[in-house]
Image (cartoon, rainbow over all chains, first blue to last red; front, side):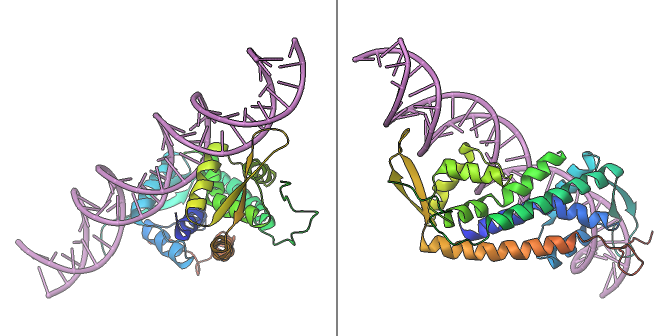
Length: 121
Length: 121
DNA sequence: ATGCAATACATTGATTTACAATATATTATA
DNA sequence: TATAATATATTGTAAATCAATGTATTGCAT
């Protein structure tokens, strides 16, 4: 239990949401996603990403099509389904609400007698 | 794999951070934390909270003291250690950076030829 | 006194999931 | 034909939340 663990927990929580967001903005294949996440300082490994994309595909939120590459094996390009777009809308709302709640919860308040929860011992 | 799972993942990610924040704002015992988290729409169960508090205590971020209750068994009131305060500062910074990154990542952009990553098939 | 309800701390077993390491396959090039 | 680069995919491990219980203390009604 160290602080880096807590930090990575925070990042984990938004992984799926961010990946859906990336795919919603345009057709991408896994390496595109890894790169875009890295730019946002939200690193994800391939061993995490592939099962996650498979889960999202099986859940009906994503589809893919094979695309030939000029320099290597063919790639799976992922796109959102209508169901995926709807789900993303819900998650966007959830994110906004949660971010607001966390910001409020972490607001630094002066610890006066009125708002403190000091125990009476 | 459904959308509620992804939503709860998002909430899980900030659990420890929020709990540290609550304790930093004043001495509390576990039921206070459950209540405050519920108000923020970030529900946590006792079976999750007790081990989590023990982890944070063993990591040196928290301390507690026993306080007699007027209506029931004694309570463990938790307070931050200096180390805990420092860790919270780091996590607050991490949260702010991550929230900014996620907001940027989920910004709705017009999908023009310039910023799209459309595959050439 | 005794039993019961409420409150509070705590543990156990199951499930999920991210990660590290590795495996499999394809393409281009030396 | 061997090697490097690229790409998809799986396996085993570890960590953490949750639901369900367990244990203990206090106050109150009978």
